[in-house]
Image 1 (tube, rainbow, N blue to C red):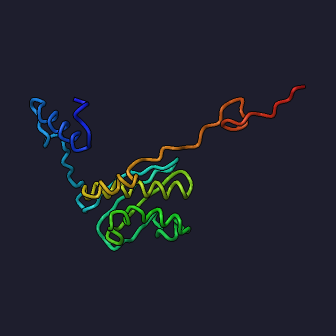
Image 2 (cartoon, helix red, strand yellow):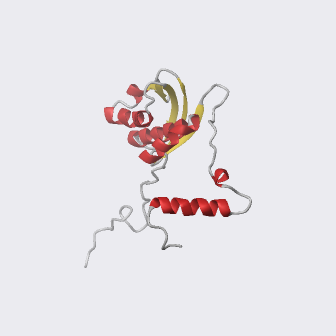
Image 3 (cartoon, rainbow, N blue to C red):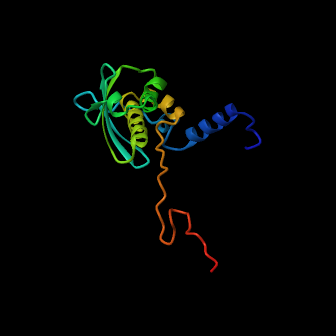
Length: 168
């Protein structure tokens, strides 16, 4: 069987044969039909995380206004790089200026908070319109960046740095 597979098309044919051959299921059932998830106000909600920062993000159709912890985006994230990070999910999906974003962020620094809001916006966009999931996933925006600062260990100066060695 492995000798027959020479290209991706052959692999696809083999996979669809195997899925179709399983008793009680079909190829159509293996695909997950994603429904838009919105509340009674037409918003989608998601949490985003980056480093130690956690963001709660709500998006709804609007004029592109972004409010973070009660302040406008350009006031809370003053650096243009952080504002660019927040805009990335909208540029990838081609929805600049179509959604209002309301976010509350806690923990971490400004860079981590901007990443957390970006993660939350990406998750909320794919919940609002499941068709956007492919572009967001391909760009890597739905994956949480789990790198955090390593903790300090006892007997060490920092997480890994040792105290200066003295021979005598």
